[in-house]
Length: 356
Image 1 (cartoon, rainbow, N blue to C red):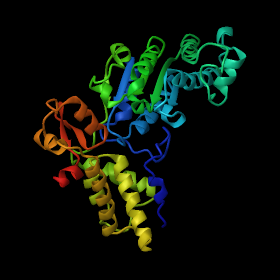
Image 2 (image 1 turned 60 degrees about the horizontal axis):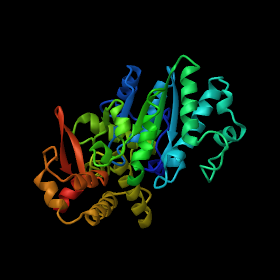
Image 3 (image 1 turned 180 degrees about the vertical axis):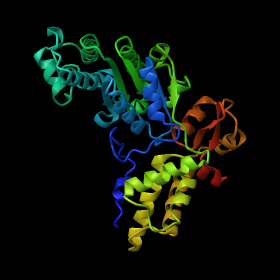
Image 4 (image 1 turned 30 degrees about the vertical axis):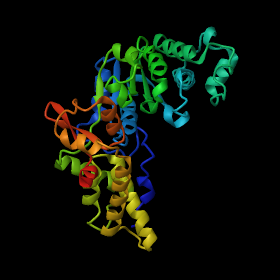
C-alpha cells in the first residue's frame, strides 16, 4: 500500500468534521464545547505553535453547531496578521455573521442591509476597508450583525476566532478591545498570543475582564500510553497505514516535544530525505537527519543566556524568568509548559536540552 505522505503537511489544519481527526488525551475539543454549552461567555485559547489550537477549535465548533449558531472565522487564512487591525477582523466577522443570518433564514434590518455594505459582506474582502462601503464601518457592521443574529433566533451565538494569536504586537489593544465588544451578544472563543496570556502587552484587558478563562493546550509529554497511541493514530490516519519501518515513530515522538505539528513535520522531512536517496520510504537515517535539522534550527534561535535560564529554572513554574524572555521562548517552542499535577512546570524542548 502506498502511503499518503502529503497528508502529513503540518500547515493544513483539519476541518471540524474531518475523518482524520484524532481526539487528544484530555479531550480538549469536547471540554471546550462543554464549557460554552454550560454558559461560559469567554474562552481564551493559548498554547505553543503547532499544538493543535486550530484543529481543536474547529472540532469544538463542529460539536457546538447542533445546539448553537456558530460564527467561525479563521482570520490568519484570510488576512495578513501583521496588518490585521480591527476593521479587517470586522469585515471577516461581518461576512461570516451575514452568512449565518442567511443560513438561519433571517432577513437583515434596513440599517444593516445597505446595498454596498451587504455586497462587501457577501463578496471578497475589499482592498480598502475604510472607504469600500458607505454603510456602517466594518467593525460596527460586524457587531450589529452578530447582535441581530442573537436577537432574531432562539439559539445562543458562539463567535469562534482562530489565528488571532498571530496578531502583531502593536495591534493587540485595538483588535482585542474590538473582540471584547461581542461578549454581550455572543459567547467568544478566541486564540490569544502568549504575551497577552502573561499580561506583557497593554492589549486584551477589555476581553479578559469580561470573563477571563485561559484554556491552555499543553504539549503531550507525560509519556503515557494514551499519548503514544494518539501520535500513532495520527500517523496511521494521515498516511493510511503505518510505515513498514519500525524505526521511525519512536524517534519522531521523542524529538517532537509533544507537539503534533512537529511530529508530522519530522515524518514528512524524513520522507523527503528518503526520496533524495531514491528510497520509497524513510529509514532510521532519514528520521535522524530530520531531527538534526530541527535541532539546528533551535540552536540558531537561542540567544545569549537562554540556555542557562531554561536549565536553571527547569521543573519550576518559570515565573522567576523575565517576562520578555519567557514569552519569546514559549512562543518559539524552545521552552515548553507541561502539566504537573494541579499546576504546570517549564522544561526546555527535548532537542534544546540535547544541545546543552
